[in-house]
Image (cartoon, rainbow, N blue to C red; front, side):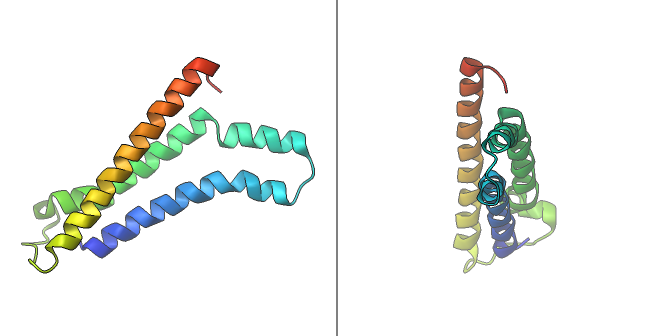
Length: 119
């Protein structure tokens, strides 16, 4: 799998996470009902919903971006061209940073949920 396709998977998943966080604000822009907005935000951005979304995006990035770059022989990609070598490494390390950032956020979310109670 090429570095460009893997980067596309990574960018697509980051965009999905961004859209997920923005949906309550988009709902708010067309409504004056503060109570329903607060309820939507609590459910939509609650720990359970965010955990599921983070798990799914991490699994997608791992399967379709990180592993093909880390283990190109499993994808039958053949040897990596030396001119393209740095692109593979750059995208691979971007994927690793994505996984670590999600892990750090999930840890913070778990800590916050434990201290305030699971929502």
